[in-house]
Length: 143
Image (cartoon, rainbow, N blue to C red; front, side, top):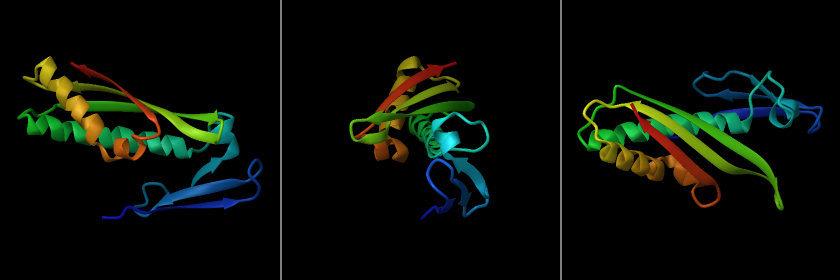
């Protein structure tokens, strides 16, 4: 399966603007710009915000799968991802992704939950994408 998205950019880096769309239509001409990415402007998205959404959703699904493999069914998994874009010696890079998850899992021991969370972090395809060049941290809480 191939997921598709597209971006259109017009103008120079600082004064230009762009739109991002997904084939499913979930995003349709969502705005992004230098100001949203580097100056904290509130109107629009950023590539890093989209990475955060992808990683949070991927991890949540992976944790659900790992818990299922352990015979556990979660009532709820909620994950936030914070993606850090920083200037490095070689230019800007995603340097860190901090995952924070809270899960309500009936009958789960702390040990089983911790193993499932660690395995989900290692096995999530988005984690794998960044594993060799980005620090990925995980704070996992069992309710």
